[in-house]
Image 1: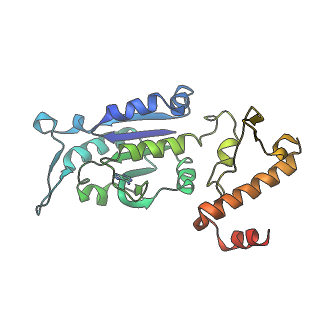
Image 2 (image 1 turned 45 degrees about the horizontal axis):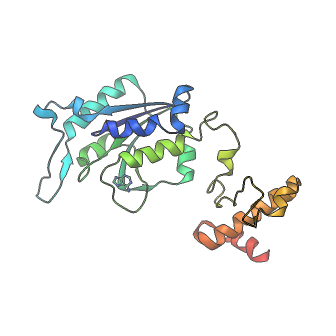
Image 3 (image 1 turned 135 degrees about the vertical axis):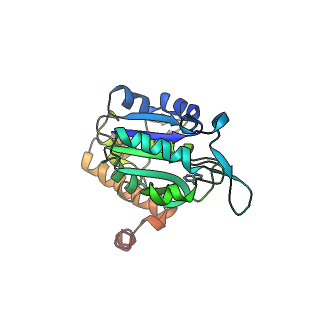
Length: 234
Ligand code: ADE
């Protein structure tokens, strides 16, 4: 899979991808991430990429011309499945969306800054708009990093244990169960006995039960009616 990213602060992004699980995915050739500096695509002097908004108001807007130059130049080499703009007014990013995007071949992510990007870029080039949550970040880079990380770890071969991504919180709309490792007793605090029993079907049952209880307590909004009834019965 290939993910291209357009940013005004490419160095911020490079360091993230150089030191995460994704660096292994890149080394193994499972994921290619390329970061493009928007300033390389401006025809304006001093590398200008932003300007005041028409109609007045505080905050700068990324200009249409460098963005279109960058997008059109990248599109010459790659047919993108989606061109995604990261923005707080986009669709909320969830595990389901990460799963769907991890099946694509080529993605282009556009990071906004300041007040955002000229609306005409959104209207004419962007195919999807994504928000990572109801808060405003100073730029789309952190949101892009979140999305690349969430997608990248789902690619087959990136995680050592192929099943572990499937056991994550949210994969089946349930939070993950608690986990423990050695020692079995620490300051008198014991690991639940069932986990030491070697009885795999009982362990799976216990984990499922814990997941349901956790979800009910912490994120009841994730449970659909059927699941809520099932828990109420147990
Ligand atoms: N850019 C600024 N805030 C953002 C958010 N919450 N999600 C995605 N991109 C953003």
